[in-house]
Image (cartoon, rainbow, N blue to C red; front, side, top):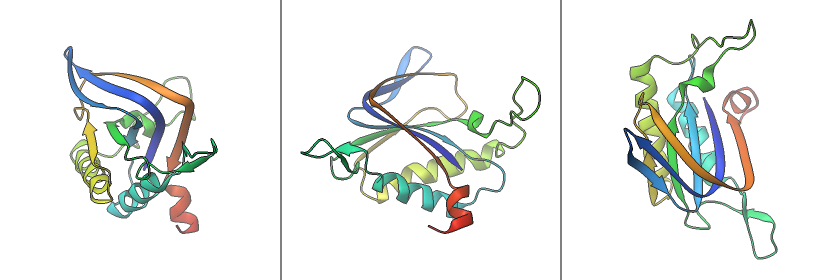
Amino acid sequence: MKAVIQRVSEASVEVDGRVVGECNQGYMILFGAAQGDTEADIDILAHKTVNLRIFCDENDKMNKSILDIDGEILAISQFTLAADVKKGNRPSFIKALEPALAEKYYDIFCEKLKDLGVKRVEKGVFGGDMKVSLVNDGPVTILYDTEIWRKNGN
């Protein structure tokens, strides 16, 4: 399971010209599930996400989590994170989790973020043609792949 986490001052997602999700200071997360991912990956990813310390403290050091700043999250489903680009120039998406299960995992991930204390978690439209806008604050972008924690423990 992969997540691209961007620290943002604001982000929004539109479908058919209408804003369907937005957030202020916090994270814009691209979430992707692949074959072999499980609900245990969701737990790992959600805990790591809410405890990630990439917000600045009073000494301008990245030392605060999204919970510490009462931040918000906009989470977008992104099957292309499972792209296989080993051969040729056209990515293969055969490793992406089948849509029904991927949507279930996406929903569970967003609910888990709320359960862990994030007060506002908004979403895009699973499988939709979305236009995402954001102001990356920093810029700060972190890539999470639960495979590293599965192999080495949490």
